[in-house]
Length: 231
Picture 1 (cartoon, rainbow, N blue to C red):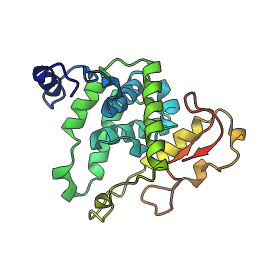
Picture 2 (cartoon, rainbow, N blue to C red):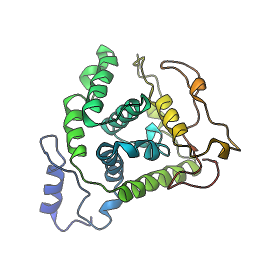
Picture 3 (cartoon, helix red, strand yellow):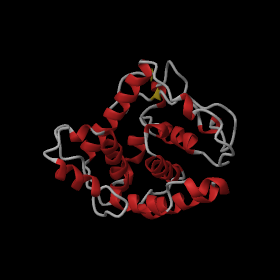
Picture 4 (cartoon, one colour):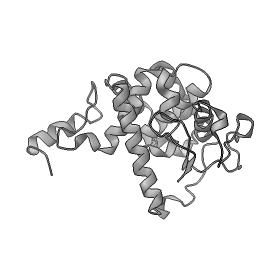
């Protein structure tokens, strides 16, 4: 639906395949900019183009915002690098993705979709031009969509909540996100209704200590604004 013809759809689809290269773009159809994967890509591309914006963009987007494994892992790598106080350029993000591969148990490696595919995808994201305004608008749309879903009571599928077997021991992206979100606070005195975890309270990797609900949103963000909101 909405494509000019089958050939146009096929050409765009081929351009998203694993053998394609060059910048990514939205589907050339009416409303193509509302395509959720494209919005996720806009945020990641902007983070790679201007690492100085990582903290502000990450403040409103918990790791489970990203709906494909590779985008999730690239985002996790970006915020891991940034949380160490380093510039999350493509080289450091690539090294972090390699480090995540080393964390996986042997049984998971054959089915893990990252590796070379993630490196190629990362290169295409880094080549994709996205303005600050476009990234902010994409982040706002992702946040609002997820907030609406939570308000409707939508949750992860029960098919995905069972025990998948042994898990990687190192999964610090939630703690890394909370750390960046805390850094994005323009004024810690603005916190009123819902306390925020401090750096000392963040759970260590592999800890069973529960972390804050991913619905927690911060005040004072350039595209969220307003008082504390817990969705």
